[in-house]
Length: 108
Length: 122
Image 1 (tube, chains in turn purple, green):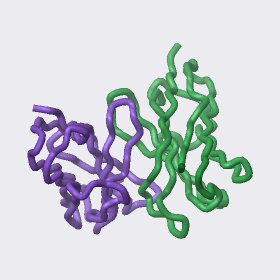
Image 2 (spheres, chains in turn brown, orange):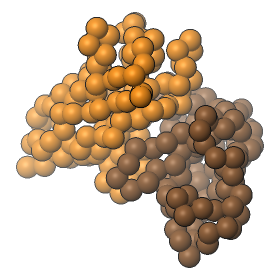
Image 3 (cartoon, one colour):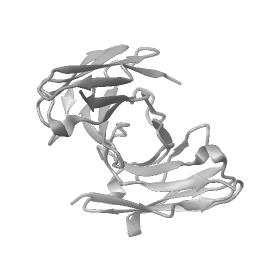
Image 4 (cartoon, chains in turn cyan, blue):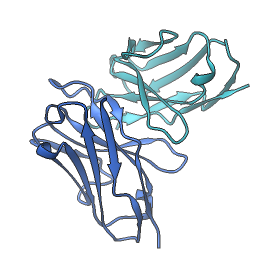
């Protein structure tokens, strides 16, 4: 299985900050990398697919980049509703996908 | 509105069985690959199983293979997960989720249901 490792595991930031979360794959996955946001007690929500494509309806302050093994999710200016847990997910081995362990983004 | 609603979770003893359901609405259910993903308490996400639009292909994680069976009824716009020989480590919230596209299996999902909690304990 391809292992996905996110860093940091948790992060404290303030409204208006620029935040970057990193995801590393244990082997090359080309651009088959997706990002989800999950709020407590809710289902995950797709933010970014194919490493850098913004899912419909997602604010443009979210962006993704990377290819191969190293990827980043950037939130350009944090809003109060962005405090949540973020997961990366590889779809290179679809349908046997795997997720990162998550990054909890908390209010400073 | 595109919607997925899971049901069927609950408390079951180790070795027991449970059948989860996912009712879909707001889209042409029969055109999409459907999936089950679970999340153990305070843990990450784990893919469990997928089924193609016409039930031609079914896939399982190694952790559930031989114990869980995925199925669907396109006439009822419903997805199912039959879980047998349940173990404590199967305790999780189980989400159903739709693949994003109809023509290919992308492996990324939108939308997801709200989840149903399965607790395996004596």
